[in-house]
Each structure stands twice: as structure tokens, then as C-alpha cells.
Length: 557
Image (cartoon, rainbow, N blue to C red; front, side, top):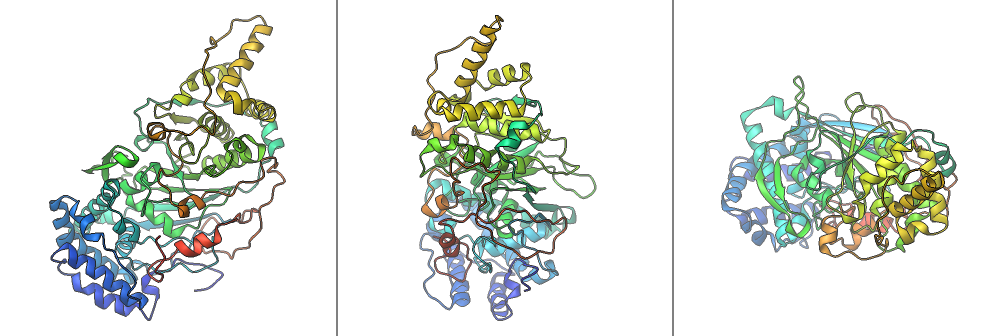
């Protein structure tokens, strides 16, 4: 594989091991394993053959699968497993050309069919995807299912059931030869801002603050026909194949084709986002985090293109800064506000005729386990959407900290506030610590009421005594449930390390330069290079330890 054109490593690329894989996978290509223990032994034997090591174990596998309804277990073993094995054996036919890797700092787009995604996910279930080669931070992650086979917590079993039902449904589609469904396109794009906008640029922005629609508390982002925010980990999918079970992980579990983005795409840099177009929902669910439950197969309500059967779904991944181990007051510093606003702009300012008129459906981005202030995060997302001329549809999830959002929107829109005016206001109130002590909304109310009083006009909204929630105040489980969670309730050290490195809180990102790292060009359409480098403090060891596939015993801790 050429260094100039990095590609995703697939099992069929390994000339020495591929014949061994084929010989073993043929065992269940015509008839599935008779019981769960036989399936477990099959996966273990594949690992022992690939790694020449006897260390691989999945002791909890049987008890995990026994928690899945018996009818689904039987259908999965007898019908889906043979189709999954045949799909793995067909990998060379399905992937006649190399799959480009979506590398850091470069715009890129890869389109796969639903059948190709099924083949990759089937290989992931069998845990045979190889370690992705390349410098740390420059490659995607193997999407092997080790982590899901080692956790007996009820909500993790429910997450695995989502994948089991996906494999059953897609096996039925392939068995029927439904080419419309098998050829359905899923597009994976890395979005890269071509310039870093500093505090002075934002302070001069003349766009009037745009439209905001505050949605009902029980509405869900994934039910929107707009751009759907994925409150992402910088490694897309977060803990979907291990411990995680909150916003991003649930979204990926009910739409497993999203998981393929994890294989294609290296971790996101500060000025980058990603969009996955055309993924389909296969399962429905109830609950969240510890109460998450898979409720069965569903029909995706999203519209379908009449010609190529593409699903009208646009999932936009943007990773928030992780303040979990930091003094959370640093999020009010100019450097961190710039990082979040520029990240949001990368997510919403892109050209696509299919999506140019769509609003951005988002919510309390990075405001759960990552410790973000939802009032501040709303204002930063609003400014980014306004610059991009895109409406913002906000899903508050009954979080009490944003209950005054509609009033804030009404007042600032009536006053014809510009992005630059709001940005300058936030910087001024950050400098005197008002944002931290009072909260952004109360600070705005006080300022506007004082302004109107000085102008002898009616006060538009009565002041209400309301205690602001300090950014570092811990939340109980109920608050975390309703917070939209930019991270995971039970993040392990590996996932917490995946949060972005914090720039100096006094840095003007117009001048702030992370360490540079050059990358070779990839063969992709619509490519270009961003000037930003790789910001990787404390991250290389994590990537080396956790980005592998079947070739390492420590791949999925």
C-alpha cells in the first residue's frame, strides 16, 4: 500500500492470512453454529489463527447472548451468521478497488453501498479486521466487537441486540437479492475548515443572529429531517463497541452503518467535523444510558430518493472539548470558546445541494460528562449557524439550565443583534468572570433590561431570580440523563483521553498553532489541505493501545 495514497486495511489485503481466514469462515457459510458456545469457539479460533496467540478470551460471550430473546438468538445463529460468513468471503468481489482512508487535515469523501457496509460489520463481529497501519492519529480504528462480547451490563446487552437485529434484517435483504437495498449508497465525508478564525474575526462578523426553533422536551434529534448532530467523540462512535451508551453510541447502535465511519476516518482535529449521509435506522429504542432498551426492528421514517434509494439522513459529527478533568471555568476563556465555535462552524458550513437548505438539529452538545455549560454552548452554536446561514433547531431534553432559551432568542432577535455583537459581549463578560458566576442567560437578561431601562423603554422580559448552575457543579444521574451528554456516563480512561486537548484559555485561536504534522495525499474526490496540525498531547499511547484489530491482545480494553 502506497504511503501517498493511504487506504483502509481489510482482511483480504493480507496475502498470508486471508487464505486461512477463508478456510475457517467457510465452516459456517452454509449452516450456522448449533449453539452459542459453538459461535463463541468459532470467534476464538479465528483469533488464535490470526494472532498465533492463545491469550484472546471472551468468557462472558455465552451469558451475554443468552440475555437476548431466544427467537432472535436462533434466527441470528441459523440464518444471519451464514450470510455474514458469505459476505466476508465475498470481500474481494465487493471491494475491487482500495477504500481510501479519510485522513486528518484533508477534505475527502468515500461512498459505500449497504452491502459493503454489511460485509465490513460482519468482519467486525467476527473480530477479523486488521490493525490500521500508519502514525498514531492518522488512521481509523478497527471496528471489531471485542468490547461488546465482554460486558454483561443490561444496557450493553441491549446495544448488542441492536446489532443482532441489523444483521438479521440485512441478511434477509441480501438473501432476497433486493438490489435497491443492497446498492443503497452511504456517503462518509470529512469536513475541514480551510481557515482558523480568531477572536477578532468573530468580533467583526456582521451576520444577524439567525432563526432558532426550540423543540419540545420529548423530541429527539434523530427524528428530525434536518442535519442531525452527533455529539461525537473525536474517534467517531465513542464507546459504541464497548462501554458507551449515550447520545452518540445510541445513534450508532440503531444505525449500524454509521459505525463504518470509525474504520474510515482518523480522529477529528480541532477544525474538523464529519457528515454521514444515507445511513438507515434499523431498530427502535427506549431509555438512555443505564435504562437503554432495544425495542425491536423498525421502519426508518426518513424519505428515500426515488432513483438511487438513498435515505434522506444527514448525521453531522462534531466533538466537544472534554472538560471532565479540567477546571470547568476554563471553558469561558477565549481560546476554548474559539475552539468550540470554530468546530461548530466546520460542522455546519459546507456545500451540498441536498443539505444547503436544512437546519442544524442539535442540543446540549458536550454538556453532560464532558462538563460543558449548555447556555454557553447554545450561544456558540447559534453564532456558528448564523455565519453559515443555517437555522438552528434546538432539542433541550428538558434540561432546566436552558429553560429560558426561547426568551433569549426572542430578545436578541428583536434587538437585531449580530454575531459580532454577541461574541464581543461574551468576551467582555468572560473577562470579568460574570459568565461563570451568573450564567450566560442571566447575564444577557441583566444587560438588556439595564439597556432598555436607560432608554426608558418597557422591559421586555421580567427579571426572575434564578440561581445559575456553576459550570463545575456535579450533576446527578437524572440531570445527566437530560443533559444531551457530549460524552459517556461510564467513560473509561481510553475514551476520556479521546477528548480534545485544551488550548491555553487565554489563547487567541487566530494565532494559536497546534503542533504540525504532515500527511500524504489520499486518493479521494474533492480533496484539499487544512493548515492546522495534529493536537495530540497524551493521545499517542491511547491510539497505539486501542486502535487495533485482531492483531493485538490489548486492542479493545
